Image 1: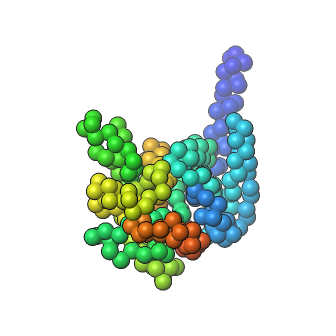
Image 2: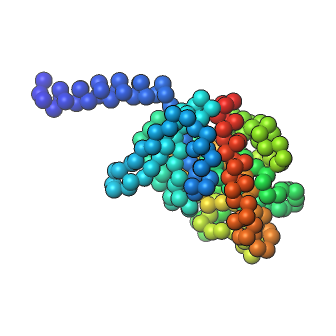
Image 3: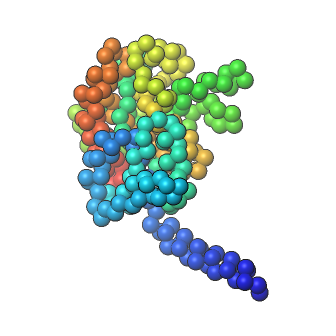
Length: 264
């Protein structure tokens, strides 16, 4: 047997043994766009280990640890769809991930279907989609990329657990399950009517969730997006409301994430 085959067999033996051991300790990935959205989650974790990902000169920090007796990895991906997609893909390809949770804040959308949504309420994604993708000239639906569904469905078990978690941990807020839309814009009243025209059942808008759902769909990993409402996008001056209520909304999301992991 030549040296190449010997090295190959040794590599496969080591890889298979390490993979089996690692698969017994799968992790839940918790991904947020901003530090403020993950601070409370990181505080609640135990057995914490900070890891610096140095490949390609990245120097990207992640945190591994325990939350509600579950192995978790938290990462701040940065704002926007590309950042969310890149880091979800990276972690899913590098670590053994059982579930993906995208947590944070979003703008609430008041509509005929959701008339009473307010700041502090928590929205659980039944589906996610892009509001700023348009290939309708080629026969696709708004938000749909070629070869992919228009909407990416969240895992039903996670949706059920998240809905229960909101009711038990954020009693002062209402909980909703519905369509969350993503795009690379901070949405204000001037833009929201166009979005509602394309997606009448939208309940919240943000900038990362659909990319996380898109990548999770491609990797066949269960996902959910949990967003606490920081502002109402139909209201003038919603950017001021966002700044005022960001911490409260992030805190509510963190409590829900902790409870989901406890009952998962």
